[in-house]
Image (tube, rainbow, N blue to C red; front, side):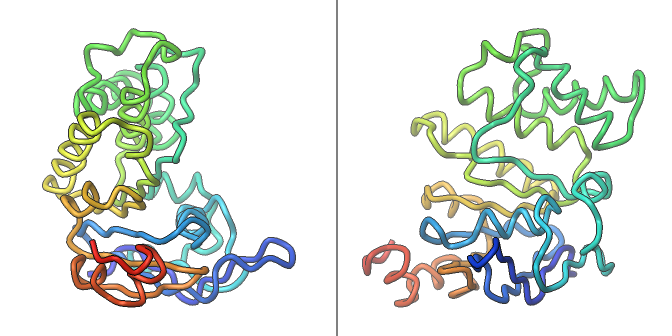
Length: 240
């Protein structure tokens, strides 16, 4: 069943057109990967799906409803959550307080229910023991875990991950991939933009490749990566 989709998505910034009639469908319960060279429009597409960027043309549907006019906050409260390439925590707050903000504003919880949701999200990503720590003291891996915990605290139906593996060591990336795989196995729908292909391919069951603001290919991951157009655009002509 289709959970989230974009049809004919066009995005212009003044005279610059970044997305050229993109069609994308995310099925309930799947893990969808999105790849493509820098400038392909991947993050812009996420912005349109999440509501942080309005589409110039096209329509976004969620659970069968046209949500094109919904704000990002409304979409988040209905189950669409996203991370960012660079984590954006509130550095003056503790780890728990950061996640509590998400539970309160993203999931509309209050009091003990909000605290429990925030703590559960931290436990799920392995940060439960660091709840009281000042966020400014966290390293990159833990900041990425916190970014993920904040999305989970909103009680998402679909999770949009934007290059969450960037900047991590191989060991750190392995831990993060295992965590994302667990979320997938628990039934959370995941859409993941990532340049670290070996990490992405461990989690996803379908792949979309974008180039120059359009979808170049989609389908089974290894079939897409073997597509000559994809190899030319993304891999410089060398198969993965």
